Image (cartoon, rainbow, N blue to C red; front, side, top):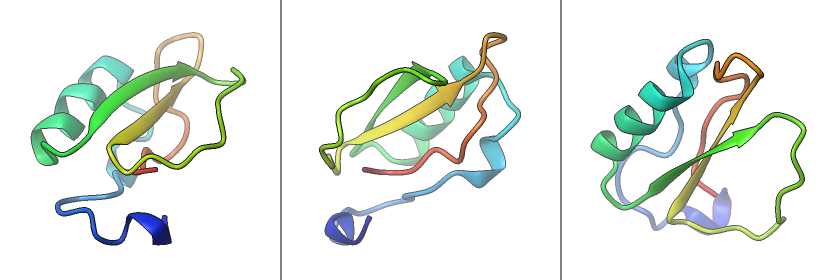
Length: 72
């Protein structure tokens, strides 16, 4: 996340672990208008590129956030 240090606003949401992925998306995009929140199923293949305008929200089969969502 060091390469995203110039991004303004909140960059990490540990308080959202255990919540609904859909609710997390809304909260993240409200708290930082500079990012788009994207829901990803846990275990899915994702690119390794770092994008300072993206927050991946990893959810389980029940659509519950399993990892701390963060910019990058």
